[in-house]
Image (cartoon, rainbow, N blue to C red; front, top):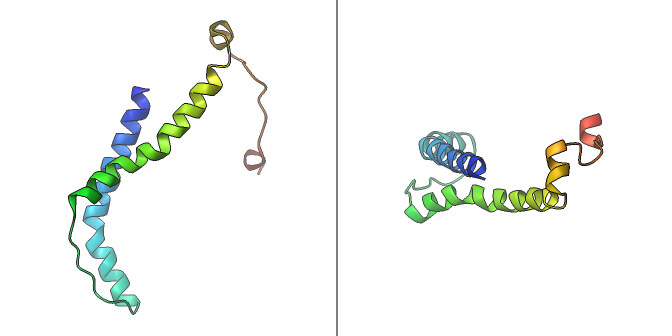
Length: 94
């Protein structure tokens, strides 16, 4: 569980830093090539905090699905491995 928290927090921090540094060049690029009005690049702390918390919105349901799927089996089956047949999905076949 802590590994997943580290991934979510690291991804949120890296994404927020990239977003803070790339907002000005990307907005200049789009206003140069497309006919859009100039925008003011001001940062609000609640949006920065939200960008750090958004990865948890996606990762918590994923953790719960995986945990509930693993908890269906007994500890002995989980230690032995091979709890279910390996099925190859459509995307893996392609």
